[in-house]
Image 1 (cartoon, rainbow over the protein chains, first blue to last red):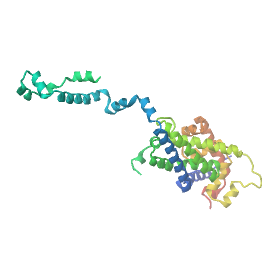
Image 2 (image 1 turned 90 degrees about the vertical axis):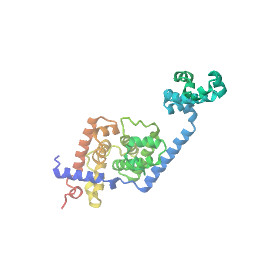
Image 3 (image 1 turned 135 degrees about the horizontal axis):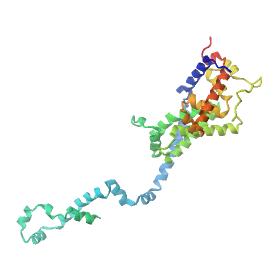
Image 4 (image 1 turned 30 degrees about the vertical axis):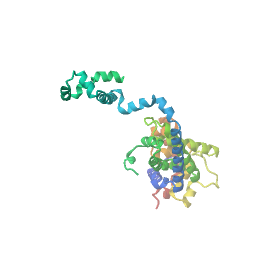
Length: 129
Length: 192
């Protein structure tokens, strides 16, 4: 069977017409039904997520693991811990005790770099672990 | 709608959908529902059935979103075409229309062929009538290739067949369509 070029061209034209957006435009009613189905499925997914947070937390290793992960892991967290420990030490060493430690050289203490009262970073890392 | 959302591909929108984003639902519907409907329309030849299939296919897509593999082999559109194809086959088999008419089959004298329908209807009806004469697999392949614009590998994924089988189906289907419409000058746009 011979198919002339005009038939092929005509067929291509029919295909092009069938491809036009108007040819497959959904009705507003169909759009609404599909979107209603979508909303229903999303509501079900949200309900499933809301009822399973504890399982998710245990699966991930607990709250602490989640917090550390948010902070960037133990390495990043150790800086925060160090700062916190420094504050604790400064608060712990009240002036009388400091004077005693430094053999009464309070005036010297006043001029002392407060950082010298802080435990070393390595010590804090050891405490944090 | 956030313009940034419209730059996302369908895979990313599926993930957003699963996280409850209503705009993702609307954008996916706008992009994909016409494709599902167009495919179903051409294969089933019935508007009401096509709408049912399109809605059912989109519902399956929504339910698949929570486990969607963003880096997977199939894009949402290809996945959807496969679902539509399978749903169409189910419907056609239930109604006994799965095979379609053999291209060499002579319709009964009182059955309207494409030429007769052409006298009373537009070009798209003539195309649909010719498509209805194709066996189901050829019909699906021709619709997906020449109307929906899928590549042969994408059609292979949608119909779950090899690429060579797609090439064979589309070639035979297109020849059968041309045979059915040959001589229909008005339908093919070069009439007097």
